[in-house]
Structure formats: structure tokens, C-alpha cells
Length: 118
Image 1 (tube, helix red, strand yellow):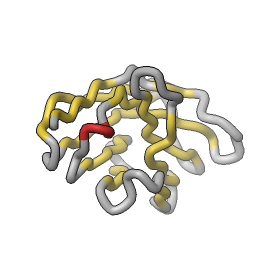
Image 2 (image 1 turned 60 degrees about the vertical axis):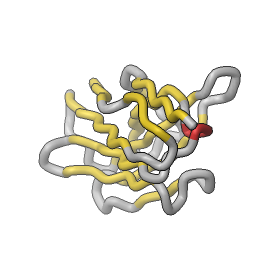
Image 3 (image 1 turned 180 degrees about the vertical axis):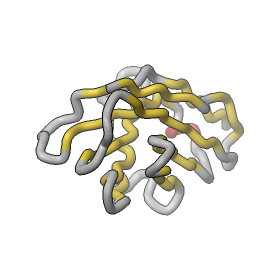
Image 4 (image 1 turned 90 degrees about the vertical axis):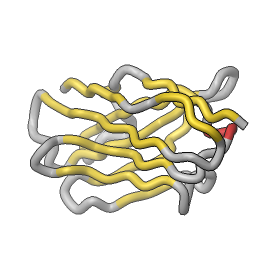
């Protein structure tokens, strides 16, 4: 499984960015896809997740109503639309994947930096 993330950058507070992750190497039926982030000096946190088959989503409280995760089933891509960005959203963002029955994410893409200026 390969995950290739892109779309990070520098944006002012209140702005928007869209991250994309291209997934390859297998079919992803019954898999879970997620976006994590890690800020300097902080632990990595799960920001949003989506089930591949049904598209069921979950969000961290800190991003609820601002971020939206989606997947394009036939293009094998997962996206994270980030709106109303805040300086505290600054972090390296990673896309990740796990099988439906797995307890942890074990496939990771390279990180993409998101910087939100105040």
C-alpha cells in the first residue's frame, strides 16, 4: 500500500486549504482512511477518518464543523477540506490507512506541512 499526500502550504487565519492523498497498491474495501496531524512538541492526533465503503466520517472535536474528509471511490483518493483555519491547526498532516478490523493505522503517507499565520 502506498499513500501519497499533497496540498499543504501557508495560509492566513480564516483561510482554506485542501489536502489530497492518492492511495494505491490494492483495493480498499472495508478499510478505514484517516488524516492525522502532528505539531512541534505535541503528540500525533487523529483529525478525521472515513470508512472506504460507506463513507462514514468522524472528526476530532477541534476540527468539527471546519474540516471535511471525503473519498473518491473510483479514483482511490482521500481528501481533507480545511476551512476557517486557525494558527493552532499548524502541523504536519499525514494520511493513513488500516484494514477494517485492525486496531491501529499501519500504512502512512509522507507528511505535508500546513502553516496558518495569524
